Image (cartoon, rainbow, N blue to C red; front, side, top):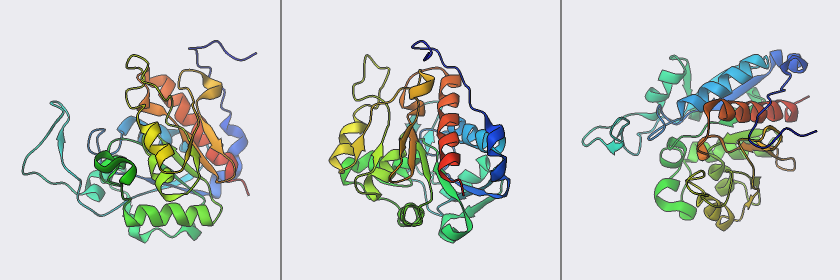
Length: 252
């Protein structure tokens, strides 16, 4: 019987993925910090679940300037300050990070993009231009290369907009399509996704068997994560489900 609404039962069994011990999975970062870079909790959750699944991980980021720098305590831009996306991403990667321009899809089995506003500000111009956004050329290349190679792509939070822009007709989720009293504060993103010609599928964060969406045709896996105002452990579980499904799709 499915679990009750609002309760998450994490039942992911990563023991079955021991065959991925020799596989290499890519995580693409967009800086460090939710308002101007990578959402740190999401990145950490991805890395933990990949580690538990036995996958080797390499982290990449584009060598470009951030759109701007946000004081995360005040929630306001910092004037006359600039930061580099690759350098900032190195904070999460503990220094072990590579310029995205050097990524060769033939050396890797799957790619995952955490969320955070960096995906909408540094990996693309979505935060400013919405459906008319442009995607960083290296991010676009990587998405197309993995897609053309039939290798899975995972995206969470706001980052599914990257796939919606680059991969025509892709089916993704960023959660719900209405704000519902502030529970889904970024629900308007779904309108931009459909305007880009992609399909949006409503999914949950608080129900464990509905917290991820798999587009089997395109091998794209998405989960809402912090698009929903909810508890951290539920977001962690949803990201775990996304990683699980990416691992499954990458089976050889």
